[in-house]
Length: 54
Image (cartoon, rainbow, N blue to C red):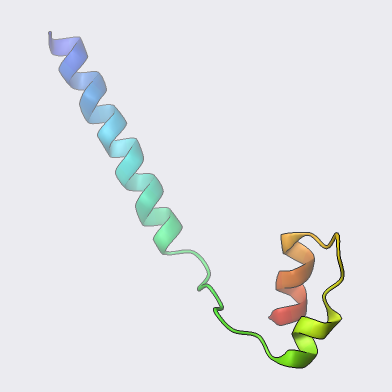
């Protein structure tokens, strides 16, 4: 019973830590201008698009 409870708390700690670290990451940019949008080509990765926008 103790091991089961302990494993639940460890899982809860991992989930909470993941959420906190994710929230403290780089801010999400919700808008781009027309020139940036026009520059994006089919097949680009998320990293390539991020470098263009930032």
